[in-house]
Length: 276
Image (cartoon, rainbow, N blue to C red):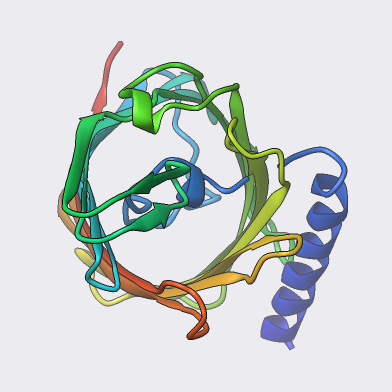
């Protein structure tokens, strides 16, 4: 009965947010920012406290059917708590795209032709994250991520023409002592394409020990008049100490034969400390 109530809350929450976001927002950061999203789930119950700072370095790679490789070497993400459960975030990275044939790379909105390499800084992203509610009974924890992609920053081929914006509302329910379910809906605009794009993620987590958590993710990105892009991946988080952890993730797109399919992977190192 308890699990059924959790699932009902999950579906209700996602439906409500979808209705709100459809008139307010527009494109997914996974499509916009380039490379792949750094591994590790966003726990809705864990907003940063005042002065707490989290810094991560992620090495990401995206391969498009062997024709093009897209790397972030590394992606750097610094998040600092201004108040309890309210934080600011800064993300950038050094990016390299190696094309082995003519291919339109959607997340930089460019066509790369024959053995061409582009490398340089990725655009700068600023974030404002808010922990809305803690989990209470059947009510899920909720955590809102707001991300702004600054125009005309980074390498010319990787830049946004206009300000990009992405909002992601995360939910979390504890199903047992060792299992929790994270799920989210998001929408935004990348600053290049006016099309509104929505995404969702379903992310079960399994605690194996005090030091190891396994997780899986099924998600998708959707835009009018285009085929959906669905992904599936698996990952593991290793807590080396209370202040240092490592994430490993591998995944693949679930796509039709008519569209380019990609595989991806990432390795992330995360450090926590009190800046104040």
